[in-house]
Length: 217
Image (cartoon, rainbow, N blue to C red; front, side):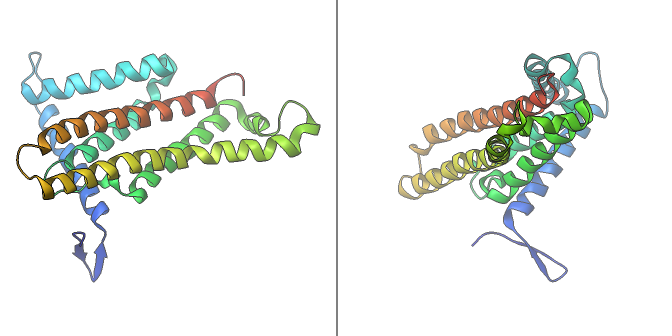
């Protein structure tokens, strides 16, 4: 049975409980890293600076300088997804990203942000991309474009869900069958996959938002 949090006669699902745990953990780490900033950083500050610099470089390389204003969103998604993926490796914990609802919420944030940015950048001319180059193609292009854009949050949601949920199931089965040495290679593979899936989600989010700002729209 999934662990549940009892609060005012209502049960909070496990993925929400673990999501709160990830948020609290990242908040504490951010506080410890920034409460006493030093020119020669300590261990926590040094690790956090390396992670943030890496995320910043990835964003600039993918979106360009104009993408810096989206760094808080992309970095927050990346840190939450990576931490959420990794805590599932710890026995007794469950990845919040192994639940489809958590991933759907993040995918919808990216989806709405993409189109908000598109409208803010190009005005209502942004909507012309759904209509095709000429008016007589509208009946054909409109359904195609709508399906194409709606498939984006579905792709983000199910890709992350399938990989992380699959990892957790494999680890559980291996731990039950061979609880000592054999699970170690599986855990290293899970760490690698967790990082890759985080990068995939971030890269797709950046590409969608960057595409909405292109002059082609």
